[in-house]
Length: 495
Image (cartoon, rainbow, N blue to C red; front, top):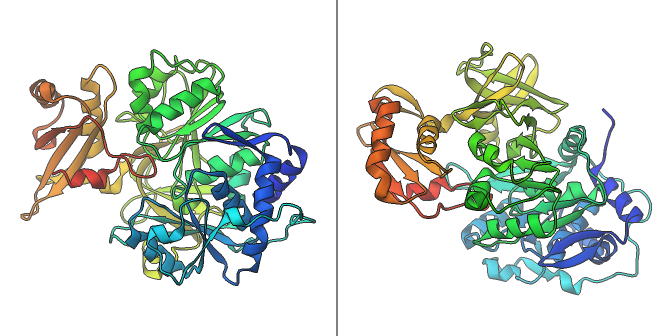
């Protein structure tokens, strides 16, 4: 496979399309020339920093995106600090990485509870637009980290996932090989929080094409803004988590987006029935399910969802075939490959996979394993392989619990609950372990409580007694985390 360099390609495209619109943020357009004028202003400061790791406050503004590009072009590593995160979490990330400088556009770093020892710099004051800092080839060490993403840790301490430039370029080459029919006239959505790695491809990949990026900031009604952009701006490429599509489902009869070329569902298990209903809204779009853990650089498998005969398990759409350069295995609990059709844990290997967690050798040892001379990352996702070689997603290992000695897949209860309602609704089962070793199943449903008895009667007809929920909770609105996924941890506080 041809060696590709994402950052070099972004610079090349900027040279070729300086007057094209690069970003549209809050209805304000910025050309490639205007974006890179800001990048040029930030780069000298970043290059002069003795540290490799530069913090960036996540804001939905052009200064934030210019800061990301400036850090990458300077051969350094960026770490996003989120304004809505607890101060203690941001401080933990700062201490873990040893960062000394933080870039911000409007919300200063001190507002994130950072100590006075951290130098917080407004990029609005870093303007050096008359000097070209991009002369010649940008030679960079591909072993250096491009970014470090901090994900939730089981102990409450965030885990740092360092993604090297080598990882990022391997992803870029494989992603490019999926054969997208995209170019400088396309209009692409970036709706993900910058602390979530799907934002990386939503930001950087369009810039390798000369395309325009439409961003959506932190907003309680984010799904309505996505709806407006899809229709009003005639977006051609949209990636979103299924839970956001779920929020849009009451408006499916009104949504018509014939210019949409691709709908990407990502970040959580996609619901087959929901997507089938949306097809009438986007008659010319190809639907693709993209899967990947943060540790394997954004995405590592793809399933092109056919209009009919979609492969699924308990309503969860298949995740398809591995990317070029990715090797996958389905392994049992002893680390032995399972047979076709049998369930096991998905292991992935390849140049996209991180070297290990940031400063956590013990955690790294737990998630890596050797098989046939290769090192694999153990995803924690339960899957099987069908006779066509497609990977069928079957839920998380930690979404399987034992109730009265029986192994229960929570996704089966969720799937059956969704089948009860004529229109799609959210359904999430949260297990609650008891002191005696038992397990209660709490079912959360996104509808009104007047259907409680008929729902329970329906579930009794379709599920064994041990799989019936102990309690049913009705919510008008499900909590979402910064990745746009349903926040299961927040639901546990309600039981």
